[in-house]
Image (cartoon, rainbow, N blue to C red; front, side):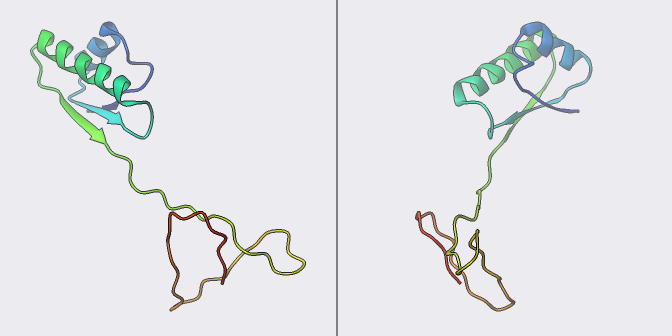
Length: 102
């Protein structure tokens, strides 16, 4: 059983309850929270699993790349800039703060 550990699982009793209910993989969602919070939960997983004599794996779910569109040039009379990609069109993905165009 994979359980995602979030803010509701910060106490020894909460972790023990999950393990006694069958949790055998503790998932840490690295997209939320900071490293110190994840370390605290990992330490709790380790200490409670040792206390109960259970083998509980830790899964660090890493955030993948986020690709978001930014702003595009506006054509005359448009309220929002937009482009239409067609098969075969080339485009550039960049981290630069630019206004895109067709």
